[in-house]
Length: 215
Ligand SMILES: O=C(O)c1ccccc1N[C@@H]1O[C@H](COP(=O)(O)O)[C@@H](O)[C@H]1O
Image (cartoon, rainbow, N blue to C red; front, side):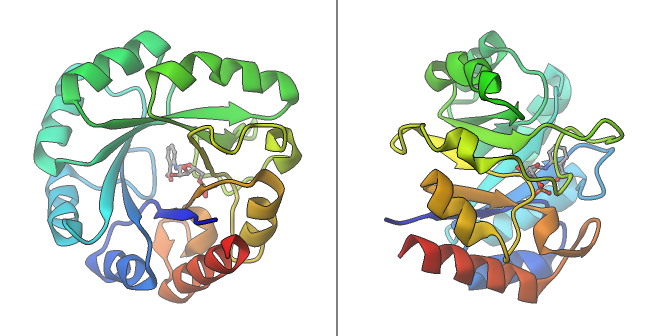
């Protein structure tokens, strides 16, 4: 089995290079001003050009309006749009048509019933990204470093196009892959030394552990 690895919330050239050197297939850029990982469109465009041809670029947005989204997509030209807000299946369908690129829809999960909320997105999005439900006190809809009970995904067909995220770290990613049989994983705060500050050694360790679990 192979696993695809996305390192999200990269905001500097140094750590973008570290993610690519470690072997991540996808690098994520956050366009959401409330996030400590937010990058302005100009910086996101620079990072995206650096990654071009070496890793795919995902642009993460949260309920972005048409005009902001249009400007950001034009500047960054991402391969993947990750929608991490309350976007509806209709909105997902509309954006997939408009931008003609891969769309990932985040769905938060906390109990078995939450899997039902993913159902409309299997058809409308290219991939469903499962993240933990944000804690009550959280100010962000994701990037909170909180895992969920991975056994909730154990019954999912592993051929379903899903991405596992939420509180993954170098220390737990192997167990998470074994439990869920995920073929794609996404990490942000688990490879940071402080909120928004990526750590090259943690990125390398994460990639190493994920690859070993999938081998
Ligand atoms: O990373 C952020 O700041 C962020 C902000 C708003 C929405 C999502 C965000 N991150 C995504 O959340 C998941 C889980 O992150 P973590 O590993 O638990 O920190 C992941 O998909 C990030 O890309």
